Length: 367
Ligand SMILES: Nc1ncnc2c1ncn2[C@@H]1O[C@H](COP(=O)(O)OP(=O)(O)OP(=O)(O)O)[C@@H](O)[C@H]1O
Image (cartoon, rainbow, N blue to C red; front, side):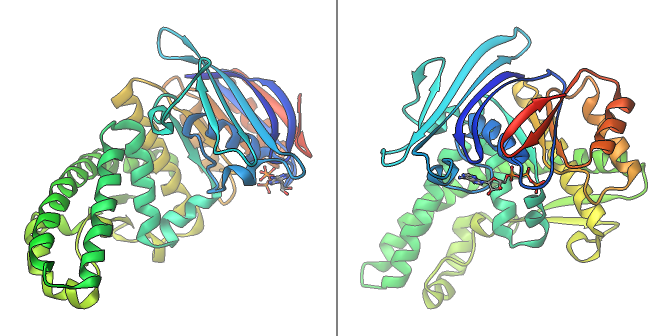
């Protein structure tokens, strides 16, 4: 899948840009705060219909303006089908408008997965250092791109969980009967989420360790495992067992809303024992594995956005990573860096079709 060109108006510090891209490597080169990540975010918007930085639509409008517009022209799949996606937002309106080939989507969720994308960003360290919420967010975002039913199951689970917690808090005479019904419904939908997460992590784990070894030149071994209450028993059984505790606590203490991913290096938790470079490496390996699985499931080569990916990596790892992503197996890559010499070295080394843009105060110039 290739983003051939993009037009941007009033997106963060990019007031106006019309850019054509290489089908292989696109480098954005500039000092801090110039707009490199903002361009990646505009590309991300076209695939996911929201910012990768957890910003609201309104926060993405250039200060002092009242709307933004991002328009992208793609070639998709083996048959190079043309797709045009436009995303626009006007302050004070009821919400953004997303169009595919001129036709407006009724539900944004229908667009997820049409143009798969994978982003590696400095904020990914939250996947290691923050709470399990972050790792579930990663799982959910990823599975929603490749599994049509997943997002629906997740929305239903969260709705039922909120219902159950409300009942637990309120107590009341009708409590037991209503709770039994909600338990059955919650358990059904939890089983779907658990099965999909398990299948996905079983696939992901060996691919992550493969890529990690490739980037680190076979020097270290890493593993990712799935942690869920549902390995013990089906949720209905667990909910029955925890009924008294849940009633006292006033919320549901078992279920897939507590799931986690356990990441280890040489059998020790990477959060405590991994160096910054090793942590970065496993995050990159996870994203490369994400690309791989999207390709297996959809047949599409996701666009890869590599934001500030070289920071903390030693020269060997940078070299290995670029060998991997510039190979035939991968597709279109966008990468940012502030180091011109490093980018020139990389481009010389990989010797593939590329474009380099310098970025200054939201302006892009091809060099
Ligand atoms: N809504 C907005 N309107 C105008 N400017 C904005 C808006 N949101 C963010 N910016 C500006 O965008 C700039 C940040 O751009 P970006 O994150 O793309 O930087 P970068 O080139 O990736 O830098 P770094 O190398 O530090 O990661 C900041 O100067 C910020 O003030």
